[in-house]
Image 1 (cartoon, rainbow, N blue to C red):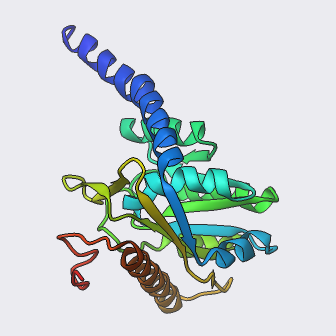
Image 2: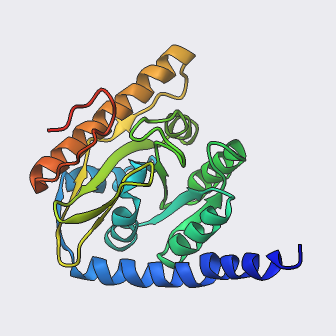
Image 3: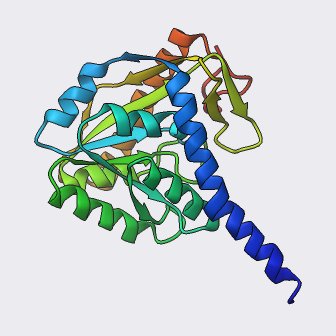
Length: 244
């Protein structure tokens, strides 16, 4: 209907023009105010200095905290993935303005093609690493999907678990990933786990075992970061994880 056109145009303007600009400004201002602390930094430095590409693995709900940190405080360039939805396009614009290289796709749509593009970029360009929200674009929350293992396998990269935490933060409880965004001037803890090697040849059972290894290590790092900040949530990361 003709009456729908102005509404759709306004929505696209807000999502693709206004929202990314505001979000980038907000992230930059917040990050400048946060008091950052790191633990396990030696794992990041070792992963970046290694000949193998670094494949950063993090939970979706910690993305906003990590984006600015990874682009400002590490060497090299990072390739990320955003879905082809309208929301994904808006997020891609945010990430590109923050200095990431964005490939479009997701686990639910055009995912294989996007992963292949990321693999080509990481393998062909020295200094490039990949960053993936390992619980996907739709969850379940904190359940690692197999894409991170396949990417490490096909690129020869090493998976680097990384997360963030802050006690003083907003939690967006209506979003499936319960996004965490620290308050201005909050203490923010960044934690890195030991890099995980992935063999080039894996059968289905071994791939699942490696996926579980990544999941367990990332949860371990998340629990560590939360303990250092005193962060707690009324809902567990997973059904099998009880709140502290």
